Length: 257
Ligand code: PEP
Image (cartoon, rainbow, N blue to C red; front, side, top):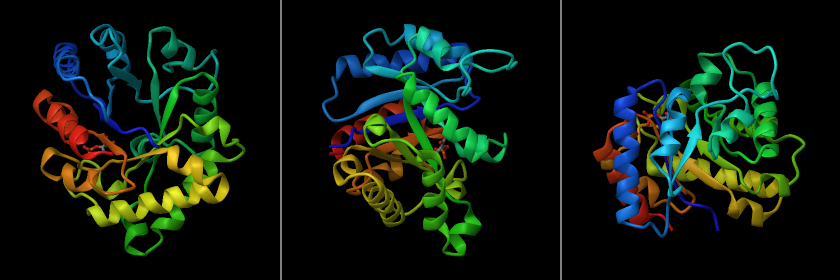
C-alpha cells in the first residue's frame, strides 16, 4: 500500500522565526496526536533546514529540501549536494517542481540526474510532474505527463523506485487558487499508476505514493484526498500557516486510506 503523505512546500517564504513557529506547532500537534495514517513532511528553504530538523527531534515530522544539485561536490556556486542534506538530517527532497522547471530552466535531463542522485543517496524523492494550461486545453495532458515520467524514470529498476513519491501538480492550479476537480485529479493519478504498472509491476504502482498539488486548502482537501488514487498532498500556500497546515494534516488523517 502507498504511503499517505501531507507535505508542505514553503517555497521562498517565511522568516526564521515564522519557520520555527510553524515547525514547532506542527511537531507539537503530531506529538500530541500520533498519526496512524499519514506522514507529515515539511520543506523549508535551505537556510531553515537545520532548525527544522532540530525542532522535529523525534522525526514525526520529516524534513525535505526543495531542491538539490545532482553532482557530488565541486565548483557549483550556490548549490547544495545530497550529502550535505543527509548530513544535517534531511530525509526527502522535492525534485522537478514546476517552478524550477519553468522559472529556473531545469531540464528533463537534469531532473533525471537529480532523481538518480537522490535515490542513490537514500534521500526520498518527491518527483513533481504536471501539465501547463495549454496542454490541458488541447487534451495533451496525459501525453505530457507520461513524457515527464518517462524521461525522469528512464533506466531505473523497479527496486530502485520503491521509495519514490510522485506529486501530480498541474501548473495551472499551482498558486492560482484554481484546483483540479477531484475527478480530474483522480483521472490523472490513475493514469500515472497505470503507466508505472505498464513499465514496472502492478505491485510497484500500488506502492508508489501519488500526491496531488495545486491550491489545496482545508476547504477543498477532503474531496481531493477521498479519491482512491490520491495518496495525499504537496501543499504550498496553505502549508505556510500553522492553523491551515494542521487542519490539512487532520483532514489527511481522517480521509486518506
Ligand atoms: C506547491 O508549492 O507545490 C503548490 C502546489 O503550491 P499551492 O498549494 O500554493 O498551489
